[in-house]
Length: 167
Image (cartoon, rainbow, N blue to C red; front, side):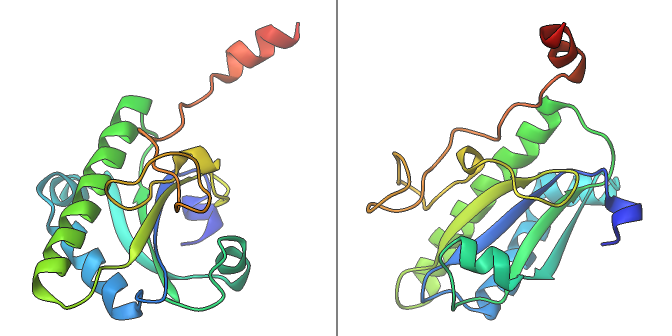
C-alpha cells in the first residue's frame, strides 16, 4: 500500500495475538474473511480490499508481542466512507473473526489465537485502543483479564464542529 494511493483511506487491522498465533492462522483467517458474504460483495464492488501485511517490530512491541505471528490483516476501505458503512464493515469483520475462531476450535486441537481489531487512521496509525476487540466473550478494560472488547469502532469526528468549538 503506497501512501499516495491509499494515504487518505481508513482501514481495520486484525492481529492475532498469543503464543498459539502463527502465520498459517493469519493466512487462514484472511481466506475466511474473503469468503464472508458481505465482505466478498464489497470487495467485488471495489469498496474494500483485504490484504496481508508484515507486522512491524514497533507495532508488535507496542502490543506486547515480541514473538508470534509476523503478519497482520488489513481491511482497507477503498473509497471515502460514511461512519455507518465503516460500522457495518467493522461488525462484519468482527463476526467473521468470531466465526473463524469457532470453526478453528472445532477442526484443530487447542484454543484458537486471541485477536484484536483496531481502526487505522488515514495516515496508517492505529486508532484509539477503544476500537480494539478481544476474544469472543471477553469484556471490560484491557488488563490482567485480557484485551478489551469494544461495541464498535470509534465515531468519526466532524472537523467543522471542531472548528466551531475553537471559535
